[in-house]
Image (cartoon, rainbow, N blue to C red):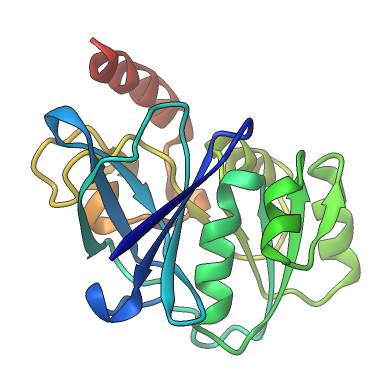
Length: 227
């Protein structure tokens, strides 16, 4: 049974499913929530609350009529060998953070940019930051061996531009339609080679991504999807 709760005025939908009714996922994998006409879909990272798998979607559209939940999709995020991790995101990245944190035992700190309403509602512990410069300052003071960024590509690119001497993995944000690599709208160029975010991602080494090409490509793809 699927239960849908909308947080009025915030654009957030909470979709809850008995955990036994969907396949088990590995950390870093996502599902596609299908709804409405033309089999529309939104990717979402799952996490567990009680016996339910929970998905959080930010949308202004009416998605109450869910037709299917597909997944798990994408490659798992392998964090073996890391012990102290800094996760940086805005509200859009909170589901990814919970997904990663629930599936591992590493120490993970959360830095959040901007609004914190969703973080408060889900009860996550975080430090609110005003700029990405604070990430650089904290990385110099603490012994983080990995930075993970999520939410918007601008956050990941901004951290990369700070030249912080810590390995950095980014959750890449692209339109995702089928989750099987058929439509090619989610292409990402990694070390000069085309990858598909829906099947090869959504996690890539930030320094290996052609962010300028990704920005132009994403704008073109979004335009096509709206036509």
